[in-house]
Image (cartoon, rainbow, N blue to C red; front, side, top):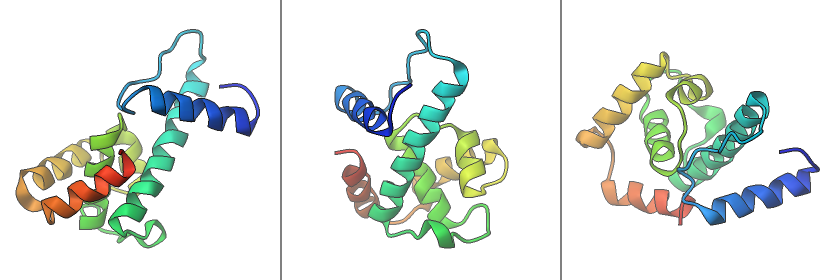
Length: 127
């Protein structure tokens, strides 16, 4: 996206309304860096909304790579976006990208918190 911050915000809103948020950006004539920057901005925005919905303070995440709050955030983001394991591992400090998959898998198989509360929080992020 090239344009003013207001233009970018309007375009993001239109893209989100047009799809479910899980679709990947189309690379039709867009340079790779701009594409990656736009994705990272979208994921960061969703991360902040998700943290708020789950009652997690992003600025006070525990150091442990598999901390419950980090895993809940990762699981929620993977539910509502096309976020990469690499981005999650770097942004949340979860170690290797492959570890993120394992943590989320265990969470989904029943190691997580109250399923209804999690589903409610996710629905606030992706109505």
